[in-house]
Length: 199
Image (cartoon, rainbow, N blue to C red):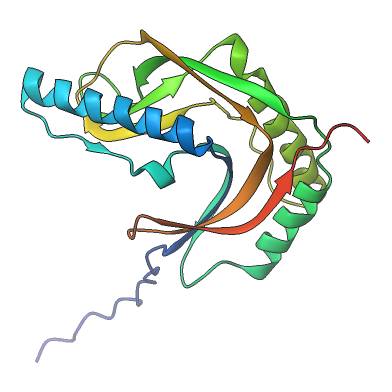
């Protein structure tokens, strides 16, 4: 009988179940207007190319300031605590954000997310991201300078070039630490911090 080959057992990683990120959310009236725009883009895409996109639910419309990772089997308490400590160090006044264009976040010609973007009127988001980044780095979390302020409107839409849109703006008065239940389309607020100005 031939000798059976022995192979080392391959490690199997559990799929991620939980995500952690900082975000800002539009107020309810602004979010309702953004949801209408998302629905309109999906209807246009279906009429143009018979692709049925999936608009985000109104309560999930947000701008991600900093993604802190996806994890299997729950959120690591040390990362959550480090994130909360970093957030507590932020001292900024409220600011206005404005998005005035839509664009694809997919490589042409593949379908993918369509998002709201802006230029000069998203500087406050850059400043808030940088303040969080400084606190996170001081707390031992790996730095990540990549940040393109955007708000996802819908997934699975055909590629489109950047084009102007009716400006969407709101006053950012707080930011939040969010727990995402991956695959369930659910976000849970872990903590919120108001923007109250420089100390």
